[in-house]
Image (cartoon, rainbow, N blue to C red; front, side, top):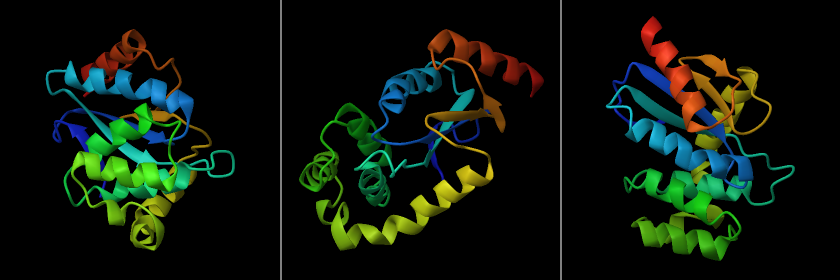
Length: 165
């Protein structure tokens, strides 16, 4: 199941493949959040995990910790915390963040977190099949977005997409 931020029935979907340890993804997170919040329900954001585990030591464990908060209904809270605190993604911090957002800290790391591995793997595999090679990667209504991840550029791209819908 995808994580949707904003109006689930919005006519424009921005799909992000991201990595919680990627500094560019951390920079994109508040821009994407604002894009959705200021869209009057016309844009929704879907986030899929694309941990670049070969270069980011904590990307995979952070993705698992984020997924562990889904059942508690606080995925987006954890999502935002992980990007704000991406310099501290060791297990003890992940458990603390999960507890702080209202999720079970015991599910956030270790063996318990492995139950969320299929979702992370599915996101990653879907990304690879879609040609995703790095993060952050965005698609707007299934069309790859090549512009800068800045609010004016994204507004232009989503407005053009909205006109075609």
